[in-house]
Each structure stands twice: as structure tokens, then as C-alpha cells.
Amino acid sequence: MENRQLDVVEVLLTGVCYDRNAELDENDLPPAIRTALWTGDGVSRPPKPDEDALAEAVGVDDPWAEISGLMFTDRDTFSGTISVTDEEMLEDWYLERADRVRFQNNPTLAYEYQDHADLALDYEQARDENRPVHADPQYIESQLDSYFDEDDEEMLDLVEVRAPAEIEITLDQLVLTQDQSTEVRKVAKAIEHRDYLAEIGLREIGKLLFVGPPGTGKTSVARGLAHQLDLPFVEVKLSMITSQYLGETAKNVEKVFEVAKRLSPCILFIDEFDFVAKTRTSDEHAAIKRAVNTLLKSIDEVSLIRDDVLLIGATNHPDELDTAAWRRFDEILHFPRPDETMRKGILDLVVSDIEIEDFDPDEIAAETSGLTGSDLRLVLREAVLSALVSDRTTLTQEDLLDAVEDFEERDHMRNLETIEEALEGEGEHEHDHDHAPTP
Ligand SMILES: Nc1ncnc2c1ncn2[C@@H]1O[C@H](COP(=O)(O)OP(=O)(O)OP(=O)(O)O)[C@@H](O)[C@H]1O
Ligand SMILES: [Mg+2]
Image (cartoon, rainbow, N blue to C red; front, side, top):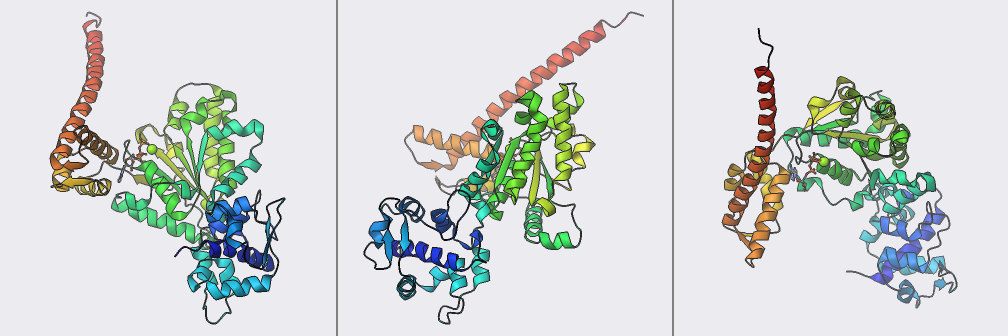
């Protein structure tokens, strides 16, 4: 049951216990309480929560109203700071009212009261299960703030940084191939045991390349990993870095890696990796070549074991990648177009919140050979919209089959265009032959 008064008092008690135990750090504070006690770039000792921070973190409009009747707290009306006037009374009050779960879910309290026989608390477990500080949006923001001065701010347009809590996709919402699941498990274990890996000198690990056609889940899996592993997600598109601020691209590439190292542990996701190959072969501006070389060098220099940065590259055009790029990745993970079984799995996932009469995913899966996960989502969207046009929020199997047909027609037209282009190309070719020198 929700109890706001207890919530507010828990923040105050946590602050008191945090102050008492210098060996505790920010990772011992539950995320909401960390947010309430956060000032600028961390939680100082003693923490001095003010009303606004408390209100936001605990989710009450007026935190002082919740606790003003208690004898052990006080408020500075000028600064809005809420303080504890009698720690012993506060402790007795809380111990009498809070259940064991509240203590066990709060590492700072689990630490302070671990000798309390009735509660039987496990501090290590509480800390393991608590979301780490590097996953908090406000921590990421403060790191970025302190790293980028005003001149550098445009750099932040090139990278997108997301806190794990801000990532919507999770790995359970994706249908993975056997290889993909195995790799995901390997990466998770490697991150968990990186001290051990460093000890045994295994450093060639933690650079993955995702290869596959558009819409097969490369970006989604990378984000899902960040969510699952509670790691900040730093995303860059190579075309963006190398197209803006031409003269400064090499410097920008370096900065992207510095951001990642600064936010570590984190995932650095470099999309459109084939852009490297393109820029190496064409003779473009010298500045771009420098940038590409800087990129390759930066990849060499970043390490999961040393820097806590997991690097994931993604490409739709593996054929365009040269060996210099390939050999920098220690694991290549394929994202094929889904087979029938996977398509059925994806359909089951994407329709989970939608009512469909006579739904037969096997039939749809059989009819959608060649479609990707992203295509299947589009098909479903189409079906939902056409049902809405006839004022229905319950779909039928027929709606879905129609949407598949529509999709394939559109896809067919798109292919026709490319075939036409191809034919034109052929034509020119033959034309050349016609004008071959006469013997
Ligand atoms: N295997 C899958 N299971 C579930 N959903 C999928 C799968 N593959 C793709 N999707 C869905 O398709 C959409 C597009 O996927 P995503 O952006 O991850 O593809 P991508 O491989 O990164 O494509 P691109 O190469 O164009 O960047 C997402 O909404 C995603 O949820
Ligand atoms: Mg993508």
C-alpha cells in the first residue's frame, strides 16, 4: 500500500544513515532517493533535501504537509530545506512502521540495520538489486554538463545519450535468433565478470558488429541491451559526424569516444558503420580521411575491460566494409530477415495489445516471406488504421491479410522502380556495344 508519509520519512532517514556511514556511496541509494538528495554532481554529506527535490522524487505535491506533524523534523522556510532535529526519534518512528521490504530495497538502510535480528537484512543483495548511479538521467546530465562547455555544446547534437530508464524497448519485446540470444548472454556475462577477464588478460572482447538489412532489429537490440544491463546508451550516426563541421570531424570523433569513456560503464553505438568504407575509397576531403583514421584508431584504443565501454557498430552494407574496419570487431552478429517461425513470434509480440478476431499468426507468417520485423510492424499499423476508418477497434484476420497484400504491392512498386533503373543502366550498356568500333 502506498504511504507517502513513510516515503518522505524514508528519504530523511536514508540521508541520516548515509551521512553516518562514510563507506557508502551513491550506488547505495535507491534511485528516487538519490534524485531527492542529489545536488549538482553528487550526493554531499550531510544531504540537505529541499522541498522541491523531495516533491519530485517521492511524487507528492507538498512533502512538508506529509511530515509537518512529526516531532523530529523541521523546515527552513527561507531555503525550503527539510532537516532532522532528532535522529533517535526518527529511527524509532520508522522502525516501528516500515516493513522489512522497505529496508531490504534500500541498500543504505540494509547496511545500517544489518545487525537488526528481526529484519534479517542482506546488504550485498540490496546493493546488487539497486539500479546503479551511472544509469540515472541526472547523473548522465551532470557528467555531460561538466564535460562540455558552451563552445562544445553543438557536439551534443551529434551524439544522442539516453539513460537506461529512458529506453522504451526491452529485449523481451524482440524475437532473437539463436546466435543473437547467445551473444546477448555472453556480453552480459562479460560485463558482469570484467574484473575476472582483466585478471586473466582477456582483453579482446566487447566490440560487436551488427550486420543485416534495414529493419531487422539492430538498433533495437543494442538499445534493449542497454536497458537490460542498466547502461547509458550513447548513439552516433557516422554520416552525421563526418558531414557536419568538416574541418573538425577528427576532433569530433575523438570527443564521441571521450563522452563514452566519461559516461562509462556505457554502450557506444555507432550506426551506419559502412560510411567508413565509403569515405576511404572515394577521394573526399582530407579532413574526412583524417576523421576516419581517427575513428579506426579510437576503436583500437577503447576497451570494455579497461574503459568499461561496450562498442557496437551496425551496418546494412557489409559488402562495403574493408578489412581494416572488419578486423576491429571481435564478434560479428548477423541480423537476417526473419524466417517463418520468427515472423510468427514477432507477430505474436506486436499484436499483444490488440484485439483480433480469428487471429491466425501462422497464416500471416506463411504469407509474409521476406518481410522484416519493421515491415511486420508497418503491416499491423496499416491494418489498425483501415479498421479505424470503418470505426472498428477490433481487427479481423482479413484486415491483416489485406494489409499484407497492400504492403506487398507497395514493396513491389518500389522494386519496379529499381528494376527500371537497372534496365536503364543495361540499356546504356548495350548502347555502348552498338557503338563498338567497327572492325
Ligand atoms: N526481431 C525483431 N523482433 C521484434 N521486433 C523487431 C525485430 N526486428 C525489428 N523489429 C522492429 O522493427 C522496428 C525497426 O527495427 P530497428 O530500428 O531496430 O532495425 P535496424 O536493423 O536498426 O534498421 P536500420 O538498419 O534501418 O537502422 C523496431 O520497431 C523493432 O521493434
Ligand atoms: Mg538502426
